[in-house]
Image 1 (cartoon, helix red, strand yellow):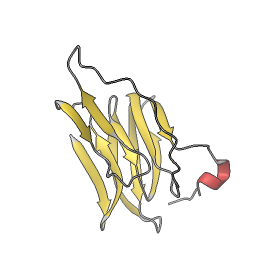
Image 2: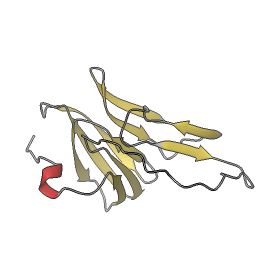
Image 3: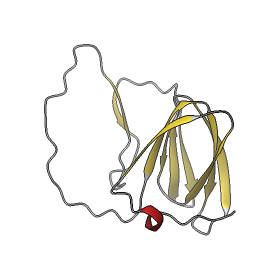
Length: 133
């Protein structure tokens, strides 16, 4: 239900399938990732104390993104830092993926809705280098 895509010792992506279920809270991403991914399953009446987030200076040198597949099916192609293909996975509605390193591309296998979350502000063309595998 949770799969890591790893090349060498580097995690390129982390997939949490729609059927994942566990009580409590689970952090999937390592604490040093600039994008944190966690799952929470709490019973009715459970309370998370009200809070604000403090301003903490962080330096982000690599954009990491999370995609939530709302509907459809999409193939994700994974590439290492040398732009060499290293694998692919099919994601379906309810799946979540953290794209942490390396390269990636997408092919919609059917009409697909996704929600993307990543660090900002978005730097336009400075944010990514496109390539033909």
